Image (cartoon, rainbow, N blue to C red; front, side, top):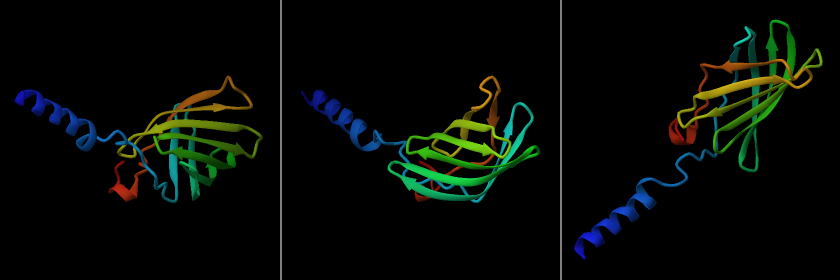
Length: 140
């Protein structure tokens, strides 16, 4: 009986207090003022003058975008669970859709982009920029 009570208490502690189910739930991300994306196809995209906002459970942002072939405007969201997506509306008429995932440390992972006007054109992308959650000392 005593062993059963200890085991029940241990399971209760593990499932409630020590390992909360919302361990990865960020209510606020910090994009900073700019960041640079390196695409596998060689393009280097820079987002500048980032303005942040909120929409329900997502952090929203807008930014100016540029690369060697032109300029544009970016608009996107980063959800509480790390889903990251944005579109860049380029001045040549193309629209780049960028998606990735941001982990608990703010690292951007699994970046892909696809040209919405020419869907056969796509690339993976990476960034060295971290997008931390400042309300949790840079961690979610």
